[in-house]
Figure (cartoon, rainbow, N blue to C red):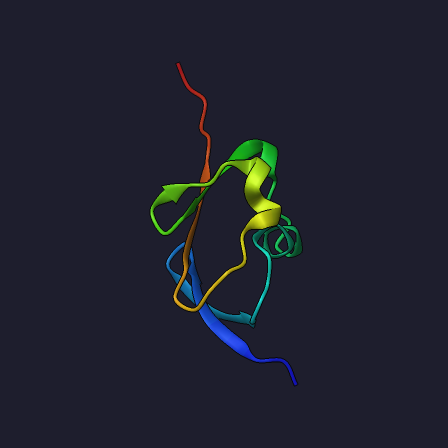
Length: 70
């Protein structure tokens, strides 16, 4: 049985498998990476580094959608 950890995404606490990579997590939730910014623990994540980041207990992810206007 895989160990689970708690994280928050957009303020909602969820349980995920330990050692989950950020890019795998975002793909599972079908996050449209070309239309959003990803914030991890209050810092914007460089999308080129998504494969290198392993989520840890109590990480806080915010998916920020871009909104056009004029």
